[in-house]
Image 1 (spheres, rainbow, N blue to C red):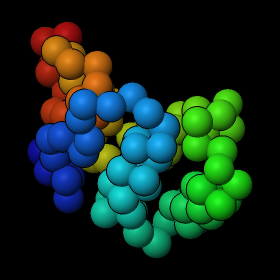
Image 2: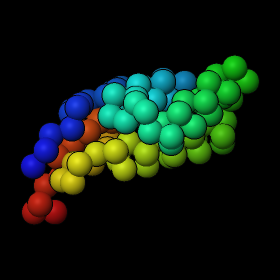
Image 3: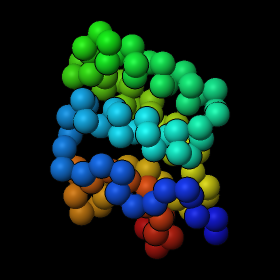
Length: 99
């Protein structure tokens, strides 16, 4: 199984979009720096930052889009999301085949 460029915790201890959005975009840029979707999402996060909209419904939508894009950039057998034991620990985790 191919291991992704990043594994483990990306950000922990917060659920604030102001904290999560930049961390998620950094993770996506490490996994798929030149992907058109990465460029589009980076522009969206930059727009939210300039507009001060991180903590809004738009910010929540951007988080979902980023999480989906990160997952899509991962090799088979890996997932992006919160840690099973800590909902505020977001990262790249190996899929447990027993689940």
